[in-house]
Structures are given as C-alpha cells and as structure tokens.
Image (cartoon, rainbow, N blue to C red; front, side, top):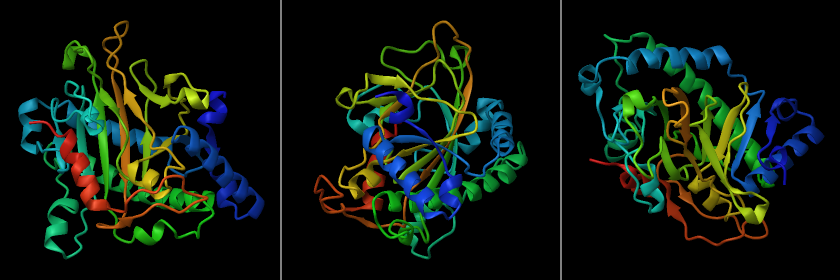
Length: 327
C-alpha cells in the first residue's frame, strides 16, 4: 500500500464547505487512514505558517537561556514550565526501558479552573511564563493554544462523521477539556551529547489522549511512524512531510473509544543523525483530550472491533504521565 494512501494528506476545505458529498468523502478518507496507521496530515486548517514560526522564534529565545535561568521554571511531567534534559522517557509508557529522551520542552496547558480543587490541582494548573526573560512567549503561545483547540474540535467532529456518529459524539465531552502544548526542542549532539544505545529524541510510544496535532520540521533525525507489515507497511517508516500541513494522530483513549477500529499511532523521533550531528529541530505538539473523568467506553460492533472495559479518562492519562516521568 503506497504511503499516499496509508498516511494521506487530507484537505479540510471540502469538509468545511458544507457540501454533503464532499464531507462524506473526506470522512471516508479519515476512516481509512486511521484504520491503518493512526496518522494523517491535514491542510486547510487555517493556522498560518507564520503563526507557527512565531511560536518557534519565541521558544528558541527561551531555550537559549542559561540552564541556571531555565531551572527556575523546571517542572516534572504534567507540570507547567520547563522540562529539561533527562526529565522523561516516553518508551516507558509502553513498557520499554530506554535512556532519557534527548530533548527539552516548554509545556503549557488548560488553566481555566473547574472549581473542583482535586481536579484543578493537576489538570488545570496555572501556566507559568518567563515574563522577564522572554515576554513575547506568552502572547504567541496563548494565541496558538486558541487556534489549536478550534482545529482539534473540528477534527473531532470530522472523526465522529467518519465513524457514522452524531457530530457532537466527541465534542459533547470537550466543554472543559484537558489539553497540553509541548514545544519540543531537539538540539544536536553539541548540546545533548552522543546518543546512548537505544536512546531517541523521543522513544517509541503511542500518545495517550484523543487527538494530537503536530507541527513539525523535517529532518533526518525526525519523526518515524510504525506501520504494521500486515497492512503493507515495513515497520518503522519516515513520516510524510508537508510544510503546510499539521500531522494528526490519535491516542490511546481514541483507539479505545473506537473499539480499536482505529489504531493509536505508534511513533518515535530519531536521535541526531551521525552524518548531521548538529541538526536542530523544534516541534509544536498539541495533545487534546476530553473533560476530566470522562468515561471512555468502546463503540459496539460493527463499528468497534474490541470490547474494552470502560476507563476514567483522568485516571488513565495520569497513569501514563507518571510512567514516563523520570527523577
């Protein structure tokens, strides 16, 4: 099965046009893509290249600060602020012991309290900003968060149609959702050192939530997606790239919700390549989920294919975040 079919670029313009046939064709293409690899690319999403570039420029100003300054904003996985080198190892989420991921991250997320203290304490922590060092970061990132939530809800409506469900099948559970934006910096070996055996910029894993929206840069030490040979794949393959597109993949909660009709997209980010050790990349990774403590139960057959036990979304997500946290 050729890459263009397995991980396609899908233009949202026909979906947004309101034409019934165009919307149905787009939904069918989404169903096919997510059934095979759990990944697709979308264009026509309305988020400009310049707005994405602005986030990168501001984040680079922060990452260029001395470690002693960045340490003021250091947090553990699930917090709001700076995740330094050695803070996480994503391979642990699938039970694979790997060295720490070769990256730094600036992480922000949902911060509007629900009024339930035990929920707000973790899922709706206040965002922290380096106002003195990089004041522009807050402005551009908050704008990007607003845009990403709008795109994520539209993608969920499209996914509902792809499953033959009502338009609000998923978005009825995103009135006050949890979400996180990680700005991931993947510096070269001059910063992170030579990779250890089995060490990646991000180790092999699946995401945990409903849908992830990724704006990435192309590189030799870049994103790879696992495509099952049973589906005509070759195992680990370089992800397709389009500078105008956002890469979309579903996470574990969405896979469970569909009764494994759709696959949680397994992926990794390769270490700095030996022939380009100074390669420096940055990704904007928006993890979207659902309202806290949503009960995620699989769609029945014939849509769903596996009958999972229902899970509490918050308990499931917290366990995964704890699994990848080091130190």
